[in-house]
Length: 508
Image 1 (cartoon, rainbow, N blue to C red):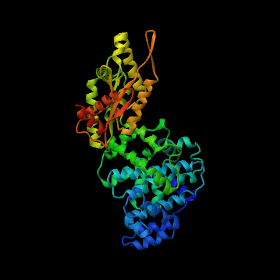
Image 2: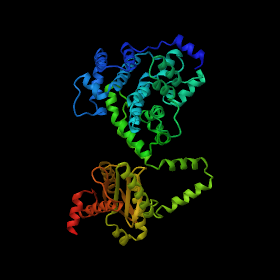
Image 3: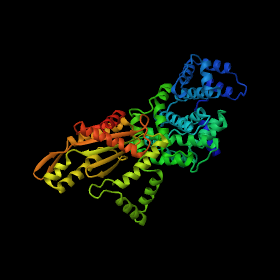
Image 4: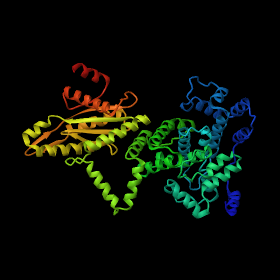
């Protein structure tokens, strides 16, 4: 650090040193012969801290069959190092929250800090790290330099909340003004508090997201912390500013997590948020619901593989490139000429790939077979041109009631198929029912007549409740559900279940 900046910080920063309990915890952590009894005694000095330790020991994060009734039992569940690290997290948050802001939005700061800590823990678990509590603490404190700089340079964050929501721009603003960013300041500060080297090293390097994979545990520790901030922003920022694909690509490069594994990490974070909110007494997502954010994540992550996304971004930057035209031509061969949705050949390829991916990653996959009711009457009464217009309208209605990530294909004649990646049975059912309702409510002009077309849909889900042996069995199940919808009176959706299979076998 620039000596002048350091001297200025030392002279002007009215920044709290670790509180008494935190200082004692740091000292205990440095004692290689520490005994469980001493730790329990130290923690019991702060009843609120002891309560939090008990709560987290009994939380889903450390799911145990037997409930911990006291601190000693909690210590057995968590382990000495984890207990000390978590206690230090609680104590420091309590201490640092009380500062007076000179421009920094403290509410936003702490929401991001706690989301980042939660994200770092989930990343650490995904990477099978043994020091996940220390990863949690490092991520929690990675931006502590902002608190110091807010005190030392009162007008540094006067540009308001917009700058604080753009972490990259904020760090550049700090460097331009001070020749150093808050990550460096935070590492220096935590070193002065005698935190373990791996903690202040990770904090100092928290803005350095690596672009190549490493199996070195020390590097994985740092990378989980560095990625935690961008992952926190996926939950914190407004929908239009969330960079799911870019962050997933960073996770792939830095930690070797593919898009499926990264999606599972986001799901873990969503499940952890309520417990983090309760323990730290904070509202992390304001009015946003984790499920809505995760749904957006699934849609983006399932849109295309990250490799394809990189290729598309490259093509966009060079629209005149001949490869762009080649991609367009390839896309044309995948499309049904009449309706514009995908054709049967591409459907088979896509479904095979998604089925294999779903089976490997245990990610749900749903497929819906849709068939227009009494379509033959349209062709017989009004001619094939009218029938073609109905088929084109059908494609538009289905497209308007599905998601960008869902693949729509014309299977043949008046049959359409919708593939719903990363979609469980309940969600698939809701989408199919929405399509059926949309057809009921849509009128069609045929010559001088007005008509309403209805549709029947059969849906099957490859997931936790039913696992199919092959794509053929999967497709057959959806087709059987469609047949059941027809014999039950049409104009409805029917999900596949074992009873349908048994009933059709009996009929056969």
